[in-house]
Image (cartoon, rainbow, N blue to C red; front, side, top):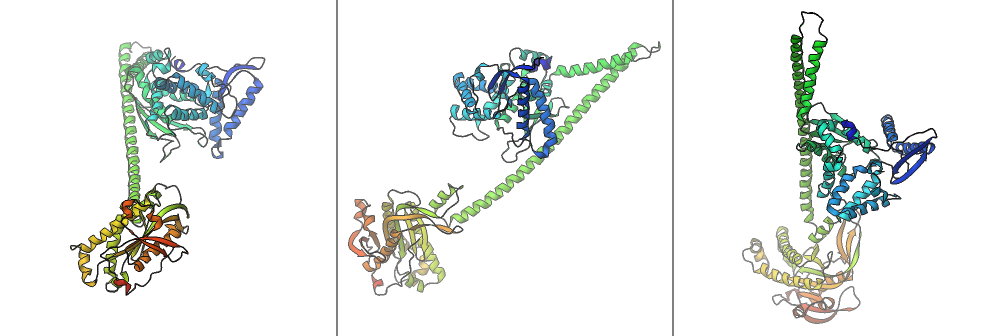
Length: 632
């Protein structure tokens, strides 16, 4: 009686003498009233072929037996037609989810996305999903995928499916809980199940009920010998072609948890030990271990039945002899029944103990494996962090940030045209200074100057591209956009002039004390700055490249830096850069006329800054020229 109460009414095919079959069938939402026997046979053969084409050669025997079982069960339910959306899921399975959504968003919105999903998968009469009997309707997994997409995008306004831990998937879990409430079972079935059933009986019927509403899943009960403990295995008939989302696991867990609540017990404890949707370690099945509280009268009935059978058996099979009294025999049967019942309970407890022990050992092994995986990942992350720290010292911070934001893109040779300001900075009388110093002392001085310069450049949004012996090349306006790149470049040079004054006046620096007697004069700089159009991008080969700027503006900035020796100035600013400066900075430089620069046919307007502390002694002993590359 309980099994009949749990089963749902279905329209079945009826054969008659005229070989006519009348049924209402759904295949991707298409409805038919009358079909002939020949048409039904052709459709069943088409349905068989569509599924057989998905099976693999290596599982022929298992797939054939599974398919025969499915086809036999399907033929009892309804007649399926064959098209792009085969009947795979009973529409009543989706009713609890739609019920939950209607509570939150209203019936009109939910019905709208149901109709939209039906139209997307090619259902010709979508409105029938809302008007026909739920038990008659079957849809495809493609329909559910489209419905899920519309729920995410239309109801919750997300651009893509969220991660596994997102609260949105709780909707499917709530739908599973609703399935075994009065709203899901119905006002007639619910009291019958509550009065005559128990959690254990309902769990034992779960594989059969899932089979009745799903043609692509195979559900098996792995363990049910221990009271209050069951274990289920859920796997697809055709693993390579079946696709379901993580939300189905949430829905099944909700169903398993809700069953004891019918009798007022706490929710069942469901442990999901294996999952087909695990992104790290996907399994070939979903495994669920369910622990629940059973109704006491079930155990009492089992014990009473055992006692009754033993007592009646001892009396019935007793010899017909006056020496054998009924009362002693009944007493012996009672003792035997109690002994058997005690032995049964002992075996049940023993089985559960071994089961829990094995489960605990499996958990320990699983967490040991996960701990080792986490340890390996942490070590790999630590190595990557150290490598990133070491490599980042050779890459400008702005460029490193761009590379980290484009991890999926492979760096390619080439660049883009953009306007930028180029700055060359050099140390005056470097050759004379290095002639009187050891290489170690020279390196210390250069590192001290470069460290101060890089700090000033980065504080103004610039990028240091290269160190050229005793000089430095910096660019403003690349790789990141910088509307006021000319202004920032000039302000950076003002800061570098002040930095050199502080370095020269420092009396507490050990390096300065070490080299002071060897230098006749203080450290001074020369700089050239020009604004123009350049190509900024990757230069080199496919196996080794660097970020560089190429163009005439680079050449002009390098020549302006050398022009300071002729003009006796500290910083030479081109007219193109000068025009982009505010009035306050224009007063900082003075116009020095138009000059020719090497590599250009025309002249360049020069605005220069002269530091009064600089000496012109270098004019008598010109510094040996250094070859400058026009591409940096």
